[in-house]
Image (cartoon, rainbow, N blue to C red; front, side):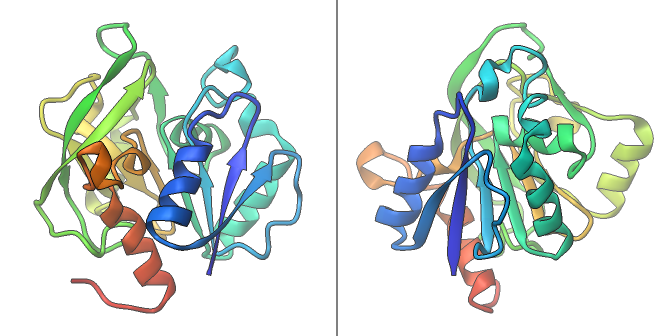
Length: 225
């Protein structure tokens, strides 16, 4: 299996994702520059955190219009895996692969902290190695992490069990305490917390490792815990 990490001008968590997958999880992984068109060789595409194109328009808006995102949409339509973390989540909503939007935090300030996150659904390629109701700690670092959506969208997210992660003690004002959602087909994930920053014991936290392990187990055809 092969992971690809898209690099936009302004991405700054691409190296963290690479390190987590290559060093901590011993996976084949490559960086992909944003003007690449062919991503057929990759099983899972990761859109990392950062400030793509400086976030000078809306967060993720410029990145959503890059050449590679057409290929990412095709990748997702084929049922292959896509995960957007922080700014990557913003890009996925901008390009329409996930519903809703991310707006300014409730306190209008950038938040850099550890968030307490609850696992809401383990029936996905991204959470199968976790337990429903499990509480984990993941770093957050964002100014626009406040998830919003209209009532119809929220109803569908709940009915289809697309809400995979919720905050405990909502740090940014996200509606329904949403920290991460997937699409209806469950092959596209967007989440604001950073699992790649919680994969090494030396850093004092490996709670994020299970999310990447879930992807690996899914791609290998394994089963949930």
